[in-house]
Amino acid sequence: MKRAFVSLVLWTGVAAAQQVAPNTALPPQEVVLQVIEATPEVRAAEAMLARAEAEERMQRVGSHETQFTVIPQQRRVDGGGRYREWEADLSRGVRWPGKARLDREIGAAGTEAAQLMLEDSHHAGARRLLALWSNWQRASVALDLQHRQVALWQREHAAVARRVQLGDAAQRDLVALEAALAQARATALQAAAEQTNARLTLTSAFPGMPLPEAVHLPSTPPVLSGSDEAWVKLILARSHEIGAAAALARKQDATARRARAERVPDPVVGVRVLNEQGGRERALGLTLSIPLGTRYRSAQAAAAGADAMGAAAELTMVRRDVDQDARRVVAMARAMHDIWQQQSEASNAAEKSAAKSERAYALGESGLAEVLVVQRLAREAALAELRAKVDAIEAVARVEVDAHERWHRHEDGEGDAPMATQLPSLGQ
Image (cartoon, rainbow, N blue to C red):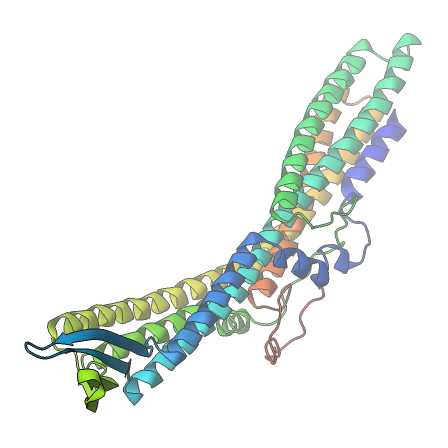
């Protein structure tokens, strides 16, 4: 009995201290990028980019098209004969040079915004995958802990039941162990349900994501290197969300300038050919058409100007929100590591307390019920330490994901911004 409780104490204290390579905490980048690429959110963003590129081509060529008009007719003259006549017009609207430049600017800004939105959809997928992966890890380590606990109590229950039959142990000890075993089994069933839910949520969102048979955590979670302000600046500099909002603001500004330019309408020029009296009279001329009316165009320009002001305000809000979120995730990375340190100390203290309680029970100074209470506290502390370790790993990885240092498709030259210190290796 004493040997079994010593084993329990040692196991609860070192269950989370396995020496494994840090790069097993998170899935490798090549796998992550592949499953993110297959998500419907990314596919939708790719479709939006294709649309934006088509719209850019439309903006470059303009909406004016050549129009051909032919009017066949017959002329009847009193006292004379009948004549076949016809009239043909070939015309086309002509953009003023300033409008063509603005149209190209609008199209380019729209494509740039769509491209950045596509990259931001990848970033959002990486953040979503990290959150779901961490939830699955937390549920998995809890399930593993409970399975081991159930196995240990089953062995102890069989040993004590045998001793009760031989008269070497009290019946109340067997009853206490039966209660502890039943509670451990119920807790294990609950942990299994939570782990199944976390696994299904992860695999449903990312169907191609392979899951390892067991969770492997480093003995010590990584510490966020560099200064907080350096990370915040890097996240802001590489934010696709800010870049997309800025591109949309430029697009709306160009659209507003285009609407103001539209107050001077584009002319329609053409060539007109007449054939009258069976070809006895012919005419060739030029046509010029200019739409009149300014109130509608002025209102349209005012509306576009309001849209541009709104887009500029939206850009300010996006910058504010990204800055706030960047500072929050960096602060959480620091805090989660400190919390893990405190949980580790609490787990060690609970382990020592459980060892003392077991020795007191072996000497007859305390009952089994008291030992079971202390052991339960030790197991809860061990589980809290494991979960805090996953939280710390996730928090550091979240900063790296937001800074595009992890799980990101780097463009040419992107991701090469210097950092004061080397980034931690965590499975990229």
